[in-house]
Image (cartoon, rainbow, N blue to C red; front, side):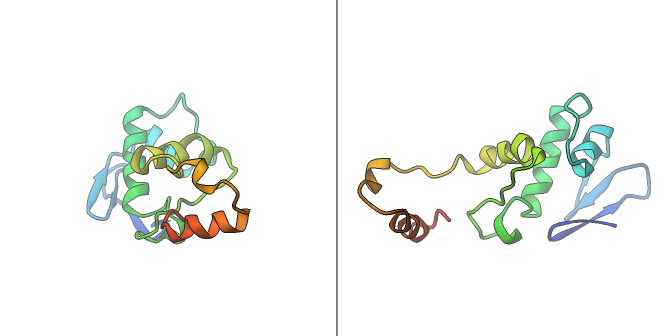
Length: 123
């Protein structure tokens, strides 16, 4: 068994396929590249592999802070896989960062901005 955050990936009895929360995914070399490698090689995985990997990240809340399905805050990292693969997937599903006007925070301290943003449910 392989653990991905709050779900278990069970290998199927035939080949390299896996099932996550009742959905079976075809275990192609590119799919496994995305699933297990720290720096997946773009020459190995396809757009379809990436789409299936993205679905697993979403199903398991693996991209969300604390792996909490209710969280609106993404997990973040300075690592290659996060910056190149996971962050763009997050943006595909949930959009990019805060969608507010900077003038709204004009004249406020960093602490005041942080409190205002957290009260809006953005963090």
